[in-house]
Length: 134
Image (cartoon, rainbow, N blue to C red; front, side, top):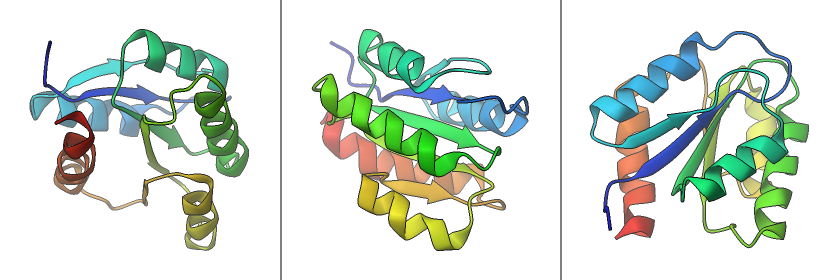
């Protein structure tokens, strides 16, 4: 069994801008993690299904559309319904600072705002997901 961290990187909703998600996916992959990028326009149901099928340790959502509260809430609810609430959920994008505490209450482990470096994201995933994998 692999001890490498497995991360699903996803772009939920109608947002069509995925450059940031691809940059993060590549940085995680370059850091030695297994990364599954789901592509654009994924529903929370599709993302959860992929995470379960791929035996993911974490799901990273990139949300630029303003629908972050709805999308993260639905994703976390679905993971719980499927008995997969041990999968670490993190994300980033255009998310107002004022919404971050509410997202954390929902169960989002970390939100990266614009300007976060790929190094900070890789380091956070290693520190916070690796412990769950070990």
